[in-house]
Image (cartoon, rainbow, N blue to C red; front, side):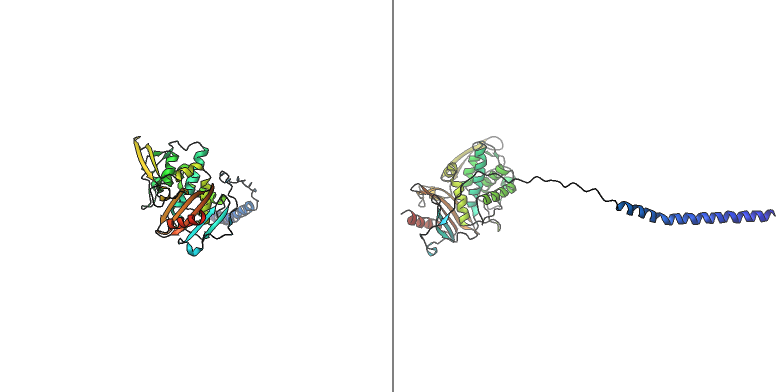
Length: 337
């Protein structure tokens, strides 16, 4: 009997263990389903709607107002295209707002260093408004000298400290790419930011065929203008007598400090010989000028002229060697005879 009871108890014990094991396995099998159900239930709860951020509208730069007028073609023809040797040209009486000569003046061209008229315009407008024109606040940085190896330079060195006026002379007379970069960094903090400012200014001036990618005019496929657009830049430039004085000066002596505080002296000479009374290319009509040249652009030139108290702008583009000044003389003879 005792043995039979023990066997019964043992079978009962084993049976309970088996039932417990089956129940445990069932619970384990249900866990993923239960968890998934909980997750699905949570997923069904809608997320709170996020409040949209209101971004303030970015305001563009504010520029001095210049009345550009509405230039119209002249009814008279001073010169035919066949008589004009350069590739593109515009000649405008800006006092009367009359385009007197137009040869391919809306064709896209490379401006070369005539670009520096826009650079000087923007830097002058900032310095004049801030009364900083004669303050020694331009310091040449390593970034200032980040220019192509074959650039025309004003021989500035890292640490040199110049006034804005001195940098304008170095830019407009010697056509220094280093000097142009110094004006860009002074105006906008970096050349990249300055290029954006140049293009913003171009839109305000109504230029439709112009895009800038640098402050000095070194050739780039995306750096271009038209003769008519360049005449408008020159017109805006000409509304400031101090800029006309600078761009009409043949020679300028600059005295400034180097990185160690020692004095430096530089003589800068205008590359535009039409303002040099000792040159065969001198013109009594030219009050200011800016030169330019690259292999891609050919010779480019802007002349701001005065005749009988009226202001004229002559822009010559895509000229070959020896064509620019004969073209200038030809225009003068026809317009100012």
